[in-house]
Length: 282
Image (cartoon, rainbow, N blue to C red; front, top):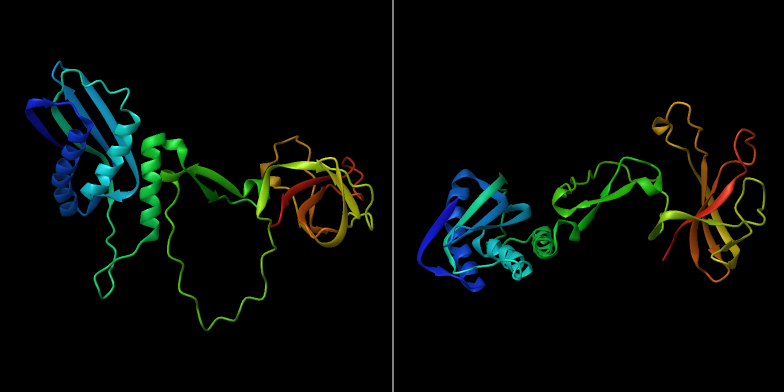
């Protein structure tokens, strides 16, 4: 950590921000020497009467550039402007690094310039989090589950794993001939029940369906894509979850939907099948 005493206490937020930049320059030299970047920083403001205000910011990627650190504290100070009481001023300001991580240098091109779109996104997310709080920016993360509603979850941006560069394609490998099934652009948080008056065959797609009080006539259907329940999540004595048969449906107006039948007509041990709408295509 680095700090600075003042013979004349400071009060203005602009003065505090300029001081953050100067203190961050001193921190940068130490971080560069150790090959690290800051992941969390704290600014301590000591009032002349002994009271201390603590302001903390976090980063989603290791950071050590003074101007970037100043931007984060600018957002945080702006958010806390009404709650920080300077009193008769601050006569000691200290900037501390709470946690660090290895700092990866980017390789520049022939002109010496580097381009990292992820870094720009991370800085934007960090500034929003500093202004509005940690829960203001969430990031979708893939989960190891084949059930659509469990396959993705959201976590705070700083806790999401860093995106890695994909491996170079193997030009000698044969082209892929098996493609994953198409998924809708919009997936509902919870599947919505629909009414299916009739199907072409007992285990086939619907001929029409009623959803949100409107009746839709099916023009085309693809499927089924069968997704079984995750038996390893089943508790002892718990009834086995029914199988799902998903269909990609296009109605007479050209709109496309992703719906499924839960359960099988041929299963005597389970309740009668039910139909659900799980998503819509663009």
